[in-house]
Image (cartoon, rainbow, N blue to C red; front, top):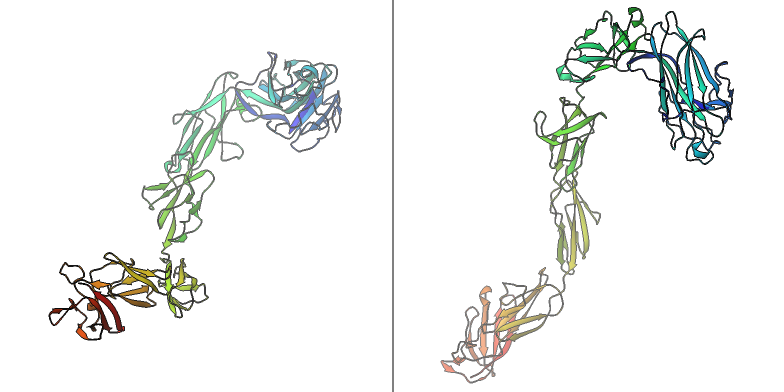
Length: 620
């Protein structure tokens, strides 16, 4: 910063200000004089000889000393250590530890003034004492500074004013003070003096920065029929466009007015517009942003000098350019079994991005985001718009998302027969296969149970994993077959998964069957059909009494075998009846005579199963 530290009285709170202090109420010209104490960091050089009677030091000042610094010395804990960089120049400032008696602490001669012209002198002041520190009672002695403007002969006082008491505060705050005066005919130099009006002692420490002299003229406003505001925003689609501008001074200072219109683009220097010296001005047809202002003086001689005239606030015409199309960060590819990736584009910081379903349509998919996650594959379009303006957007940038189908797989649990081979099939036509066993074909042969996994990769690079759980089959063994009422129940020997049948053809998971008489052959096998075991189960008796229950000896399910033969014998081996198994039935008679109650034997010959024998009882 550029500031002056004085043990005086300058603060951000105006208390008991002298009535002579005032700001220019109109428009201000460029600075004729600007003391900013340089913008560098650290300690600055001493002021020129004759500027002050105070003693320069490069370290912490004592009463009657001054220094130029960007912050208060660390050893002076009762001063604010961090000074806000909010004055026009920032950087260093003048720091003064006021003497024990009032007196002059800053004087400088300012030349380059114009005669018969109103001027404003201004400066930023701060009371450096931290009111929270207990060193000085009641916040310390306040600072109090008097400004005086003298003519170059040092004989005529042109203006003066006092800040009044500026007391300490709990946070560092700059405050600007100003004094206006009128230069005399033939006068182009004045003398500025600053006095310490405060008492010496604990407190009265002041910082000063940005001492500025500039002309003060009428407050001049630029108006336009297009807008009452000083800023007009025009979309590029409406350009080229011209504006009629009018300068309206308020006659607060000048009785007559001379004008000079100026223009600039961006932050360039203001340039006079040749011939634009009337109170009204029509701009050319504009295709880009332009800023206009008008210099005003009471005399044509002064209007050409920025130091002798005042200037209006700028009238800004902003041509809002059409944004460039957003820059795509690339198309995206995904697989159907993956999370859909985001589409990304880049736009300027002052732009927002909207996403559309088509290149020219109005169906908007997302607003104010450069990142878009679509719900499906396709081509999507990003458009940039300038923030804060209702102007048309950029050309649209196409960004494509392709989603390829991943192989569709389903894990399998397979029963494996002992001492055999099993072929595992990935089940999907694909470009590559990677088995956990190290093989790379679609099908592999395994000879032992376990877990096998294959990664299936499509032509597009999408992959899926399929798992095979190969479980060795438990051998089917019938432990017992018995009946309960008319129910036949088969008990397996083991906890495996088995199927059961009483006809050799129709198998079921349930191990229970309905009995309807006759001799049964029980079939049991594992689910993988590795092996099948059989066992005959005859009823314990037949009772051919015509009541419909167990009246006949019959073998169920023989119709599913291509050939079968059944024979019935008595206990002596005499053949009582024989015939094909299909539809075979015996009612307990021989040659139309009922045989007595006794035990009888049967023999069944089945194709593929050999001969089965057993006995049963006939009860009368």
